[in-house]
Image 1 (tube, rainbow, N blue to C red):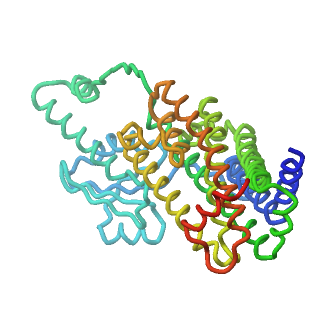
Image 2 (cartoon, rainbow, N blue to C red):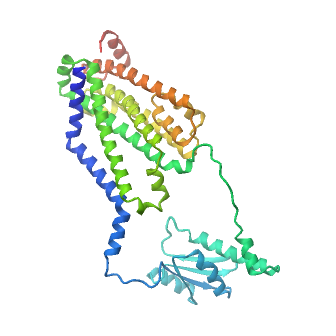
Image 3 (cartoon, one colour):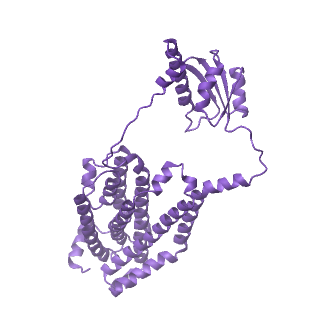
Length: 416
């Protein structure tokens, strides 16, 4: 136990004292601080900028040319759907309107060519530009109102028919996938990246020690099992520390700027995730990391030099990528409870992500959650023990990476 604790402390302190590790952590925290404080900083810059004249009109200038002859009526229907912009009727030709938009004198222009037809002029069409949909809805409402009044209804009665509201009540028995999607996707990405990065660090650490022949001294003074578990748990604690700092700083800066983000549904859904989801994130991060870190440590011990790591670790990386793609496909397709996802949630190498997605996006029976976690915990210790055996054999073999048969034969005679 003393050997294990000494190795764990050495590995953990090595990561914490590493300038690159700390530099990356501090950089991520600073980036999150700036991004989450951006609305507040933008508001301050606007309030402090006294050199800008106060405009008498709000929003952007949109010019309207009505070729149907119902100018004022068209304006009365279009104005309510552009509440933040200034709409003006004009007699300019299409070429003149195009020049106006190109020069920036007006932001957009609309030519109403018929009761249900129009031309929309814009310089660069933004990805979230919904102006065309807005125009179409307004023209359709005007056309419907004209049709109803021609049948004898008053303008008020026609308005009541067009604007009739439908009321409904939602009875939700399970999860709201649309509101849970964003934070589930982000947490899955963090889990995937953390496992890949820290798993590779474990493999590189083993390969470096083996290449420098330091492993030959370590293996004679400490049990392979203590070396393997100490390295994996030490780097895991470092990763958990980094993840805690990143998530903690993100929540801190969000709370400081919560009022500024009040109107952003996506950001609020991310930072208002239920506490059980956050606890499951930590649990599956720890268990998922250990599973793959032990595998990376084992393949790292079979590399004779650092340059061989990319080759020896390919099977583990491909396995991780395949699991990630499976989970993201189910997440994006809204099928977290498909047969393949249910099966994957009980397989140790895929359950950290598969079961987490099922918990976040659907209703999972408690016995399935408990069974998945139980299998994962037992598998973590089992894979850790086997990895220690492979580690003991691999670190003493140089030259060409050993074949599977040679490793199995050597493991039978070794003691971890």
